[in-house]
Image (tube, rainbow over all chains, first blue to last red; front, side, top):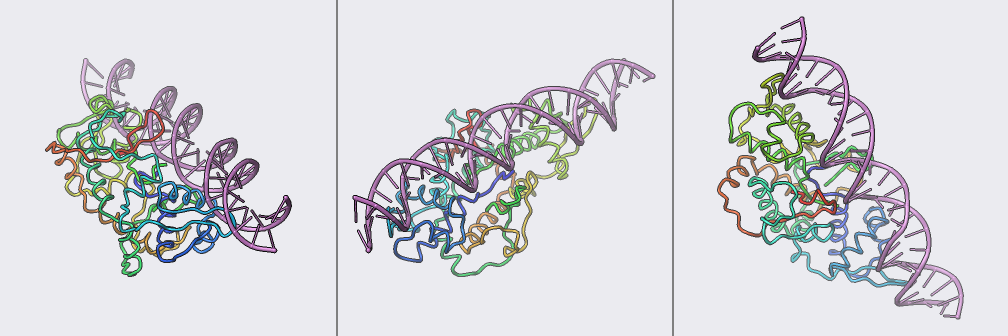
Length: 152
Length: 152
DNA sequence: TGAATTCGTACTGCAGGAGTCCTATATTCC
DNA sequence: GGAATATAGGACTCCTGCAGTACGAATTCA
């Protein structure tokens, strides 16, 4: 189902960006996968997307790889999510691309979520993670797919 | 893709609940579908889920249907999302059901999202929608599927 | 009692996306 | 120049959300 969730792609991207932000230099997708424990195939795809966004610079060939070129303090969660999907920021909610009626409560929901995603910067998550102030009370989404369990 | 999105199920549920909260009486899924413009087949399934949550009471037979029995002020967005999926609230983030490492930034993200989802009550969305204070600046998720466009 | 209505459940099909894999291209080093 | 390495880009498979349909069970009403 996953009615609301961050999927693996977002998770992996966040992990990779956090890793790179704390380490200088060039990292190949293979090495990055080894260090972070993420599946290499998907990580490669994600890194390519991030490079296309201009957040990473890629170098081919021997000793090549990716290097972080953006300040995570300037990147919002919305930008990350947008970068990784077929998502477009919308300037006006009353456009007609929605197939089913965009009812008022739905619009209100959009606005809230937009605000939330915009306000959270990736650096916030990295720094918060470093502080390890992690009490219980988080959320876990359980997918039905055996190997896909955590959704965000 | 849909890395982060409310899917149709959540949207439809919200629309249906908002509709019922502003109208008293019993509504069959057929009538509700007619009034809201939602597909009857999926709406019927959603209503059943909501009934199983105890938010609606169902009556069979002629003049049967569903009736809202919960105060939307007491229902959070998290509860709605949870009710509609194979989602379990998690009491401790370090359980071992996650297949990939739950890195610190990821945990921080979970906490933020959990907080957001918990704080937004369904009544907030209904009331906000009624005020029609809807300036531009919302978000639109564009799926590739032709008839599926808006994701939340 | 029987007909009409409505929920409950199961089954099916389709489309799109997540995730994997394979090949082509670019770069470095010997 | 050739081998090794790494990104670039596509093609492919599988899963699942969405939707439709059909039949059975429960309830009302004539």
